[in-house]
Length: 336
Image (cartoon, rainbow, N blue to C red; front, side, top):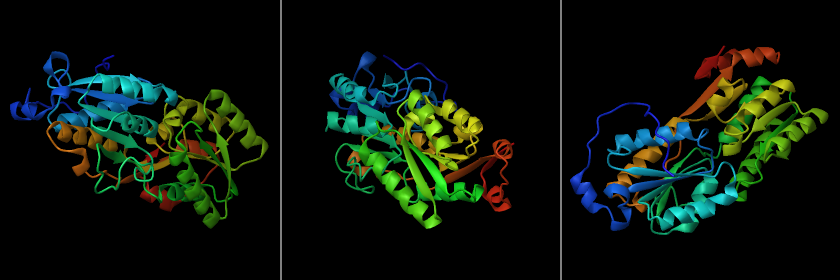
């Protein structure tokens, strides 16, 4: 199925078809109407993945590629059923797409397992070296490269910010998706445990794989009188369950830190993360460079260099929290 057309974040004029670049594309990259086709492999739903897809298109446009003009895009949406991703990846390989763009981690792993020849460009929240996607950030080797939101100290910084907002907290609940690859979840939890010990906090890790689990988790947090909540980076939590988690946190009056700004814009308390826009844009640019002849092995995997702190003052007031001036001073955005 083709992707539903979405407007780019910035309109630009494009070169319709680069003759020299087209000559360099492999035969298998040529598809419908003579255009190379990018396969998008996503664990999200079409609705929740629309913004990221638009950002991918933005990066592609900066590299000189526009859908329906000199590339096509075929989308495969797993809608949070990660077990469907390997079959979807295999289908894209059979269709001989020129390149596979993936999000999140489970999609990247499925694409890597499906092909050693078709280039794969990922956007993930985990450590691509630890996950086995690349040999190193600087020299990926193989056919896989991309962008990651991951830095080792990110979780500890998120927990620290939450602790500054809720200094009375002694126990913090942590939501994880058990359907995520263990190599992605376990390092996050270990890093949080170390950070919690340094701050004198106890963690209560709860597995959430759907709406029923989410409601049960919040009942557990309330029963055990957990003081605050840490929502880990996961497609399910930022997509299908995003509004529910924010609503349940409000219902139970539970201060929570989230990975993304839109969760805070929707009523969450605070987020601290790298820029989703920058990561998706870089992935699109990387894909364009590969279509223009670059090899994935020669394109370093990119880590974030900019992080954004977003605070929802309305939510803080509703929870009876006083936001420190020093936090407000360093916040990139304050929602009132």
